[in-house]
Image (tube, rainbow, N blue to C red; front, side, top):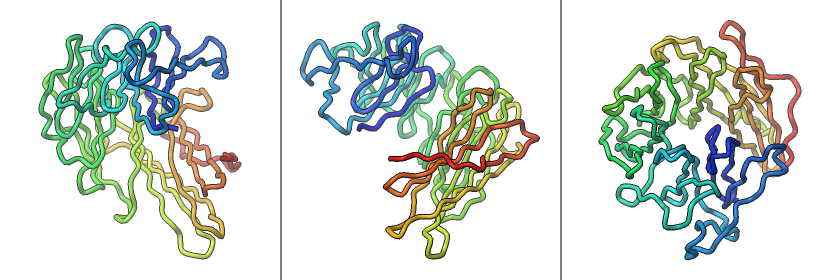
Length: 314
């Protein structure tokens, strides 16, 4: 399988149904269930009528982006270039959209508020338009350890970013605007320095403002190879203030096997359709794994993991 990333509502062929980038291809949304999705036709690298996504290539890197050129079809970054969406899926090889210096960045949302999806890369913004990209310096993003599109945190109608600094414990809001990004509030994460932070975005408390979700995992001492994950949900206050919002924590753990410890991962989605994004904590040991669902709720309610683990056989 290739590496892919999905953006909610990604629609490459403009039929109003969400499409999914997966493996080395795309699954088009159907009117019924996922089992009725149909794969995009594959074509050789040099074919004039198809995109370079041969099924035999296992490690194609693809990221759903949004409508970069304003033609009504969502586009994607595939192997370092932008593939333009069209009524039949991605357009032929001649319709690749070149990125500055031949390298496309990561999705940033519509960071300048002009209606076109943008990218960012190593201290620069690549601003989408019908005629290609406009490059804008963004020195505030230079040296960042991790950057995540965050939606509209401050309520001005323009997409914002959250950035993990090079100290790996300070998260900053970077507010989008016509002139690029400006610095917003900062949040210092309390986590052991030797652990690696995950950063996710979701509306856990259902107030319509994206929240900052961070997580770290650690191996506990003892013969059971136990992995413990701690998840922190920081509510965002009006104006994009992440420094003073309510923080809620939830912790879950899984024992390993005689062969070794388990890995841990976090995903966010509204799995029960109640309007609150939920947390799904994954633990795996290479032979299978378990998941624990943490339902989102209003800020006045403490997050609690459901007592029944979900088996995720692999």
